[in-house]
Length: 472
Image 1 (tube, rainbow, N blue to C red):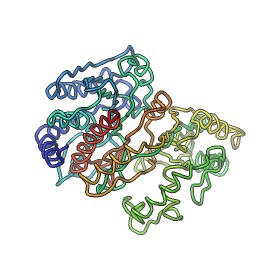
Image 2: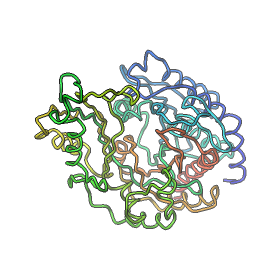
Image 3: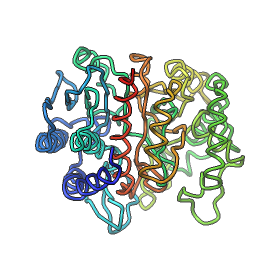
């Protein structure tokens, strides 16, 4: 592969074709079904699917077939088949649904308004994960431009990832014969620890998410009458949370949620700590003077990738501060998100959380924990020598530094699903979500140079996959 020609083609293709269409994609508020139950009536998902499908057809490579597949009462998927120079199969994955808006965007930014600032494209879903369709097809176009052989490629773009990929198992089953048995799976929905090298994700945490409801009164009462007699919802919430985590440092108290961390992942965490140093937490947008949870850099990395952690990500039942009268709150709902170790069983964790939160409720309050989302994590199989060499060489060619191997703190349910279904496959899990890119939060951005370089890396890895499989 001619590295210079590859980089030049990708750079021009991104600037002239991908970026303008990606900006149109950002304008579409196609929130995932968990956040927009009426997504079918609103039509945003359909519009996003059409935009990506039309662009893909306009930029089709020889022999490509595209179909929008939609099972009854399911979100659609875009299914693209590209014949190769061998019957071996590569599966490339991405998603087109988005997280909700969230507050806190800068005054000149908006989740549904694309804004270019220097080398960054701001807007919801550009980096997570709208670019994946464009980058996947662009990587294959690179190979076609240079007449480089490659395996058969299948591109699968789902529309339910931000809702836990709850529709995807049905499509994997329905499309099983058309997908085949991939020997390489490429997913562009992960993160990167910096914008200076190719980041290969080695593990993903699982997740249990649910709604904890606390009911105390049939209706609110004057706090002068209720306080001191009525146990507050927050008093009960504190007691329930203290069953789950240590209040001083967030350490999870449920020992069944911990796993033995593989020695290989500990060593990779140590190597990553040498690369990142204090950037592990310095890249996070702390307010002035705020410190991270105490621990070494290695501890911070393992906390974020291999140990359980609890977050409260939403609440109902509280009036806005400007409208808050002196009233004892009758009920409270909080949304809990428990990140799990990659090899922790999510079903077990779901039952354990529900049992711990509901048993013996303080003051005999009405307490209920309803699990809304449950997905196990994923730990990559050992990388083949050809893949290690290909990733390092591609990273050197387009980033100027060797690839780094990183455990990821987020969840991609699709990976665990595919890991079980295709245990012999090699995985390239990577992405553009680097420092301050803030997926799911305000001011999400796509770092454009990383998107371009990643596209070139994917093309080179696909080419070397063919060479490795056909060298004999």
